[in-house]
Length: 156
Image 1 (cartoon, helix red, strand yellow):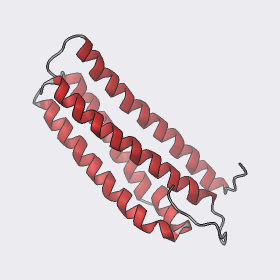
Image 2 (image 1 turned 45 degrees about the horizontal axis):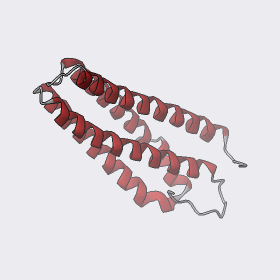
Image 3 (image 1 turned 90 degrees about the vertical axis):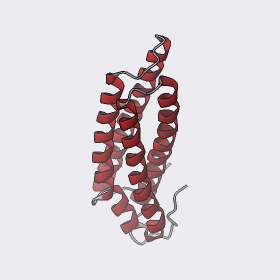
Image 4 (image 1 turned 30 degrees about the vertical axis):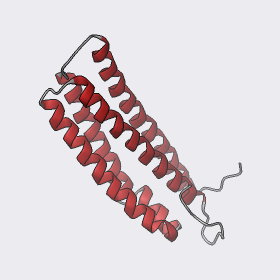
């Protein structure tokens, strides 16, 4: 596939790809941590899970801020104004994901039953992965767009 990028957009797409990979790894690590506790017949969530949820929340908040404040989403809309509705939806999804993660942190602090938290976390992780794929796709498509190009921008 022949791609046309400016050096700035290429650098940002590479950064975005790497950051999404790290976030996916952190999400997977937390899933593994919950599974390991379950294998050891843990009934309640331990403090390590709460700490891991807090670290993930801090990373996500920073990542979403970078995407929204002059980063990926703004650049995508500047290159492809037809993405403005999708960008608005992504920003709302970011707030919803952070709120859901806040609820998981609060719940984990109350040491709930492990299966209950694991199920809620799996739902969150699925939504987060979908958001990361959607953001990456929209930014990738917008980064390929050369000013004046007739190719339509849309999130696939």
